[in-house]
Length: 349
Image (tube, rainbow, N blue to C red; front, side):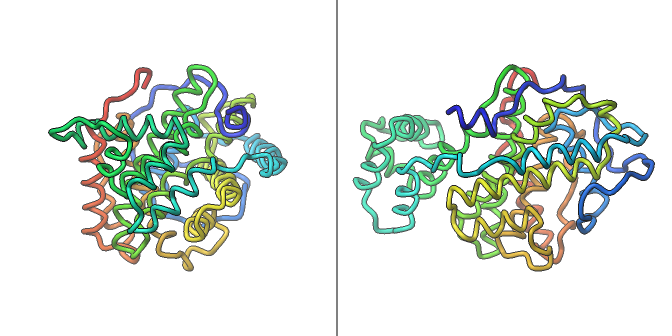
């Protein structure tokens, strides 16, 4: 797992300052030098939510008025280091995972064949057995075999377990106590984004598993940005501008896209991640691209609320009327709250 720690794993972060309750109006800032090609401006409440989320994920203190004259050079250093990374040094995914996911596209595949594929990865076997014995899947009779567990989970459940088995170690890999916190936050966002993407994807005509997969990988590169930032001496981090934070978000999205291409994820997922990294104009968003965009914001809000960084959940149902009906977004927010509001928080949050 050394490659995970070398590229994706966050190093110890600067101490995370206590988070004040979020307000959706930012204080005025002195003009800052442009850091990157400007993206279409989101609604003010979405821009404030994204800034809040980036500060939370990167371990930065709350914003304070003032310009930071060093941020443009800092962002450029981050970009240069990231550009030098040779994606060919990343290993391929374990062979069993692509084979298993391919088999799961066939509705007629037998449980015995799926169990045979799962059985080639001892860690995946353990995860399948653990999930199948959870309260959610509890049955009158105990699970006695891997094939029984596979049949009980079903194709959708097995897809999700396999995907989590692939991504969770990447997002949670860390060094030191602050890195552990950052890695857990990355995974917390991934779970929520995958859930929201799968929920909204059914309204956009997306393949359910591709929607889930896009959501769970979309923030992968942020771990590398955290790692790079941890090696920098940042003067007055509270004055880093929204433009700098957006530049970090774009850098993370670009690294995610490079990793996804190396892993040869499905074409629809690659396209959605490409759009997420702003390689294509927003008006050309694919069905999965628009799904991922909305799911990303909804999961931001849910994660911040879960960690008490927001006093109340913002109502985002009217934020994307051209992409999803307000009722669909509202239902997705309600479902996220139902699924995650009661999730126990890790110590240290």
